[in-house]
Structure formats: C-alpha cells, structure tokens
Length: 91
Image 1 (cartoon, one colour):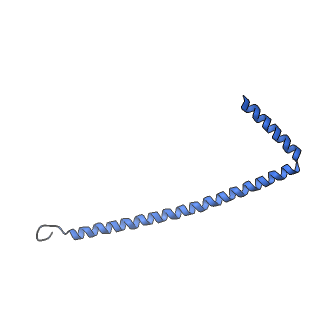
Image 2 (cartoon, one colour):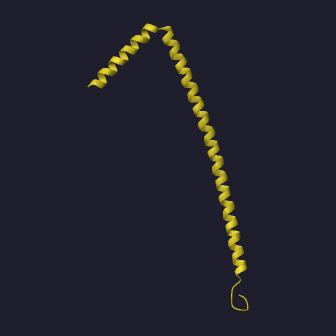
C-alpha cells in the first residue's frame, strides 16, 4: 500500500501481463503441436490414398487381362450376374 492507502496498481498490471504472455506462449505451443499432428495425418492419408489407387489399378489391369484371355466366359458371367440382379430386384 502507498502512503495514500492505495495499492500498487503497476505491479498488479505486470503480473497480469506476465500471465497473459505465458498464456499466449502456451496457446502458441498447442497450436503448433496441432499443426504438426495435422500435417502428419495429412501425409498418412495421402499415402493410404496412393496405395488404394495403386491396388485398384492393379486389380483393374488383372481383370482386363482375364477378360481378354477368356472373352466367352466373361460375357457368360456378365449375363448371369445381370439376370440374377434383375430377378432379385424385380420382386
């Protein structure tokens, strides 16, 4: 307290400013950690997407090869699948 009975407002303001600065630093750290985690997750998602596209392309190539090797079987299988699908959905 001062001679006039008032408390020292300057020191209270400094402690509030110090606490705000500490809070700002903490929040900046949290945001930076979140950004790093999001970056890692984004990289993982891209890797999984690339693997899925690669596997899908390989399966499509394999299927196309089988169709070219056995065209009559492919047409027969397609006809039977269409007929069964029609019968199931018609009911």
